[in-house]
Length: 179
Image (cartoon, rainbow, N blue to C red; front, side, top):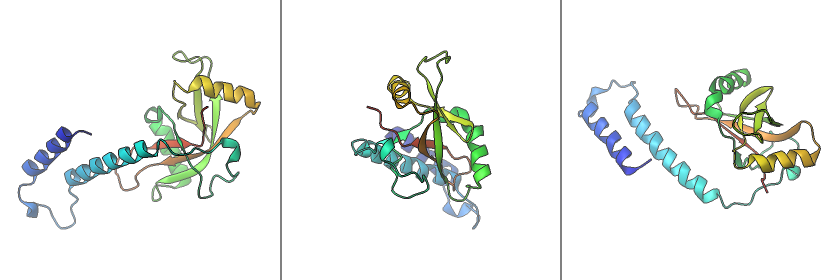
């Protein structure tokens, strides 16, 4: 988010709330919370860029138990915003609203009939589609799946979101090394 956006939010905060005493004691200032969220997103973005050079874990080297600590969920699934209803259903079924995290297993399924990408690889968790492998990586991942001979091709996965947000963005990360 740019400095202009932050300034715009600050102007809205000042115009909306010139007197800080206008809020009731237990009333949440959603504009202030949004500004803090934008700041947190910027920090996360910087951290994500900084961690892009970290060492990745090969799928075959990961422990079998996806619940174990120390797993590096290094690959961000794309298109998950179009699967929000599916992701919310998974969060509900796991009763994970308080924790903001579900550690599970994802299945990577080739989708050769996809009209946008004949190498498309969809990501499925518990029989529910949650997104795709990025288009620029899908040919390599398709080859990895074919070479492995594994059917289904399973990888550890993590669904994550901010449990304090009333409308959280829900993301999906998996353990995957694209070579």
